Length: 575
Image: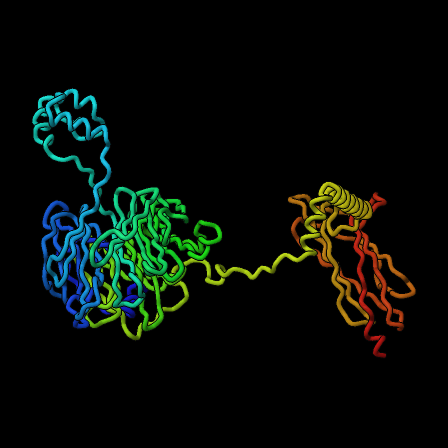
């Protein structure tokens, strides 16, 4: 109830259509002003059933504006400006298989095909011989390995060879991710290049007008997620998450990545916030790495890690330039969307179904619009209130924010370094001296303990037959004091008898009415108070010690001994 109240106070429920039949991911959804009228539309690459009914859909407001049929499953969708001709309307690039379909004014404009890969010379030579009927299908099977032809039954091989032997051999790759890169200016209305990652572990940068390959870079693994920043003619940085669980950084004039981030699990989401890279991993964690540390170490420095309550399904950036506010939107498998600013969870949005794609930006004429699609094909539109305020404190349970603030540790001084070197060079001698001092301290403690036992100075007796405990209380300002002795038998069930108490003091300084008592039978567990009065005879404001002995008939050594430090007689001092 608390989370829903918090989320409803920040977001307006603008639209929810549970039967919109939109099946897509965050990589196939974009917001763009397609007609140059200042009103952004929602462009979605719909996956359909996965085998048919794939479409490019455009929404305006809450209604469907147009749709175009796609020939294959879309793997990515971006909007970009091809030129500066008026009116400046963006084009839509849809990556599907080995092709990029360019739409302008919601109409097909151009189709780009990835260059074919190099064919194995041995395989090409074998098929050339088959084309000229120089070898039979069984010989062809023995010479080929690892292709579909080997899975055919012997009776089907001849038909397969006759069908394909006249066709040219091609090795085609497919597109796995797509992004945009500004050409030479960082403005919002600047011309952008297309950046595509392929199954052949390569990255291409395409010219926005001629669609020629401007740059080609290689990766150690297949790219799956991509984030691009910078300008092609100046300096750019392409952050790519790959299937081997690593993140690589590509830069200008570098055909291969120089920097790498090694993750403990596979990445499922990748966004960039300023100079930091935010990665959602399969182990229900959210990691943040710094771009600055790449220049020094070649590896990304992990700033912090957040543990999530459920697996990550999708991620996006919440960017409000008018407020100077940036956060990360994380869709979770428990039907929640968490909003993180730095390490803090600042908002939680409950959804009726599992969220598969998130897009935040300007929709229509509203800047702070959050668009989500669900696993069941639903469409959710929420608008951020203009009065919404996100607190910097973390709403999730856990340690306070101050615990994550790093201490300002001072630099090592020359004195500290010299002391460290001295300890390192004289480690054996220092250890021996420490052990010697420790042994002396233990010996002194043992001697003091034995002395206390022999003189019965401990507050409890060491005798097993007469286990006693005694404490003394002095009351009064003087010259008369009341001295109370509390004696207790600590035995379990055995009473103690035939005990006496004797006092030893300076008779020139004190006088006592009774200096010797016989103690009655002591029942276990009961406290026996024994009172007596002490009179101070001196008017010089001095005090002394009165010794108390607990004696047993027939024994010369006392069972207990107590030294009572008498206070100064304030009554005589006043007189």
